[in-house]
Structure formats: structure tokens, C-alpha cells
Length: 228
Ligand SMILES: [Fe+2]
Image (cartoon, rainbow, N blue to C red; front, side):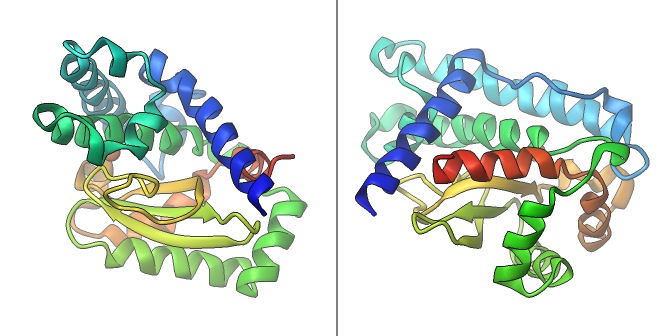
């Protein structure tokens, strides 16, 4: 068990270390490629304004802290509670914003490429009974998050899946908002992710989001989490 935990942590650090240094993950698709489920205007503003601002503001917050600047992002976020008071909230908001969006944009893909590997389907069905039941559970969590935040699919140290939510830009592994597990998929439920197209209908946004999930990436994240 201990070995698995250490492996998960070290892999997670490796995975996010690159993001910390490079800021925003590069999109694997164009802004219009997720149409009609996510409109191109939302994608453009979401990536080039919201996400970019989190990355810029994180760099600004760490400007006077060279030691922290060189730390992998996930390590910073894991230790938010111990960071110097003047930058704690800024790193929590903007560092979380960078990490959360890097994962989110990476687990989306054009509808034509949204194919679930059989192996992942079996894992989900084994735990949730059916793919539909899993989606319902995830949507229920995403709808239950009051205000802005995220719904998450995590892999626990024993390899099982679990669903959780966080507020604002908190990530589940932050020491101030801790839920055990390694994130492999998340859903942005901030209004900036859907309001232009879906207005106040978060449920419609969630129902359509399934059409553009990059399940191969989710499965690859799962394998990484369990150390394969
Ligand atoms: Fe967002």
C-alpha cells in the first residue's frame, strides 16, 4: 500500500511539474473544435483570458519568492497552508486555477474523437454499475457545488475511483481542502465555463459535456495514477 501511495505522489508531481514551469497546457484542438457542445467564444475567453490570467497572476504572486517559484506546482498546492501569509490566498486561487484548467482542457476533445477505451468502461461499470450511473453521479456532484467550483474524478491509493467537488479554484489535494486521491478527470462548473451558451442551465452544459470528453486521456491519467 505504502509503495502505491509513494508512486502515485511521485507520478503526480512529475505530471504537474511540467505545468508549473510552463503555465498553461497547450490545447490539442482549436477553439471551435468542441462545437456545438462548447462554443468557440466560450473556449477562447476561457483559455486566453481566464486561464491565462491565472497563469500570469501565479507568476506575479511568486515574484519575490525564488525558492517557491522553482517548486513544482502540485507541491506548492499541497502545502498551501504553510506558504507565507501575504501570498497564500493568491497561490491558492491562481495556482489552483492553473492546475485545474490544465487538467480540464486536457480531458476534452472533439466529439469525433471522444471514444472510451473498453478497459476504462469496464473499470467504471464495475464500480458504478453502468456508464450512465457514473455520469449521473458525476452530474449530481457538479450540480451540488454551490457557486463556483469543480467536480472531480479521483483514483484512491487502492485503485478505486471516487467523485468529489471543490469550491472556487481549490484542488482536492490542497492541504486546506484535502480529499485523498489523484485527479484523472474534472469538470469546471464556474459560470465562465458555460454561461454564454447555456445561461443558468448548468445541467444542460453537463449533459452535453460528455460528448467531448477525451476518455483516452482519462484512461491514460488513470494508468499513470495506478503506476502502470
Ligand atoms: Fe474555468
